[in-house]
Amino acid sequence: MADTKKLFIKTYGCQMNVYDSERMAEAMGGAGYETTDTVDDADMILLNTCHIREKAAEKVYSELGRFKGLKAEKPDLKIGVAGCVAQAEGEEIMRRQPMVDLVVGPQAYHRLPEMEAKAQAGEKALDTDFPEEDKFEKLKRRPRAKRGPTAFLTVQEGCDKFCAFCVVPYTRGAEVSRPVDRILTEARDLVERGVREITLLGQNVNAYHGAGADGDWSLARLIWELDKVDGLERIRFTTSHPNDMMDDLIEAHGTCQKLMPYLHLPVQSGSDKILKRMNRNHDRDSYLKLIERIREARPDILLSGDFIVGFPEETEADFQDTMDLIEDVKYGQAFSFKYSTRPGTPAAERALVDDAEATDRLYRLQGLITQQQREIQDSMVGREVSVLFERAGRFEGQMMGKSEYLHAVHVADCKAEIGELAKVRIVESRTNSLAGKLI
Ligand code: 5AD
Ligand code: SF4
Image 1 (cartoon, rainbow, N blue to C red):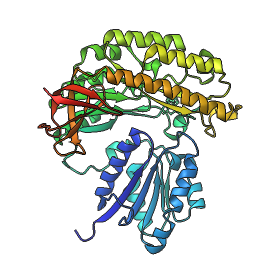
Image 2: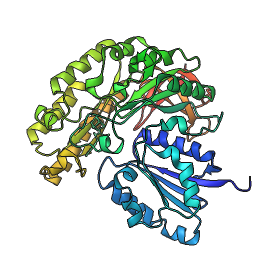
Image 3: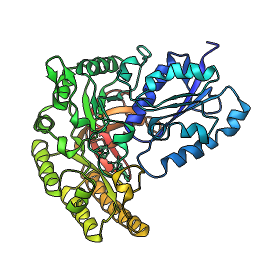
Image 4: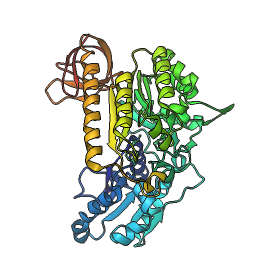
């Protein structure tokens, strides 16, 4: 088609942004755009931004600065900023980078095609509303496009928890759950298009309470309904808050075959004092008891977490409490960050921990996590796992997939095809992956 235009999307941040970018690409597909992997041949560049940590806005401004030359060469090129920086900065973006044509917040991107039309007419388009309508319903899908075996599906957005360090309640807004029937329709559609594994997404996914025919459904109930979808083999969900880990969800981890034994359950800190100051509304002990109950339901579950070090007023003793908690829990995976001030959040007013000290804590914590990760990964050697093959490996005949524990597994001389689920014996633990043989 002669008038197909090209859209380049760069995605920052979390999995929800990855999902949002896919949906924006699909919506723009309806407006005559196809995606491209290179900026040079793009007719439109969209940065889908993240605001969670450190100088996010500054990074976006400098990235935009790099497009100046391109825009000068190609005056018709449209440049847009989406995501949480768009939400937080709004008009300021166009003031500082006048070449930006379009700024769209995470709750308004179903209006992207209209905004693009406006930009084509030479006007600036800005939308950072939190509209009433369901953006997912309004988004055009490209019908029946084949897809890979794994997919994200957003079921819940926003957060009402207001952790003292976090911008999410401000950028993504209040907690909203999508209705059950829409999620099921989308899941069935994904499966028809080749998807075998769905990861349910939400900033607070286990707080899910979407409308079903007979009232609000819990996440566990939604998972059980998805369990009935033929052709769907695996279900995951992320990210969860400890206080929303309900009994039925814990139980599902023990009884639902399709629910994978992997749980991302951030605790942020192991110090009761810091947890209180973070406004987490749980303490160390309640988290540890929760982990115990989850492990009772599913003994082999692999746990993952998020940690912040150097939160205001964190002392060395508080940090040691975090290290002790990690020793107790044993994580198979974790993401750790040095606290960074987010303007507008309650913690932003507080005195910072010495930066060198915070950096040192981060390294020590990451050292411990790496060690635990290694031990758990090494303990997989000799075990039989199931692998969902996602793509060809780097070497001839090699395939790569993920185990139920989300470990990357490489199989040499592999006869399995993409999208196939197969039993694999793990034979070696490498730096960031496992090697196995088909059974
Ligand atoms: N500073 C550092 N880390 C943060 N996170 C969220 N906000 C901040 C901040 N201001 C981390 C938390 C959260 C993860 C997604 O990002 O650990 O769980
Ligand atoms: Fe942010 Fe806390 Fe909500 Fe997670 S639970 S999104 S850290 S406010």
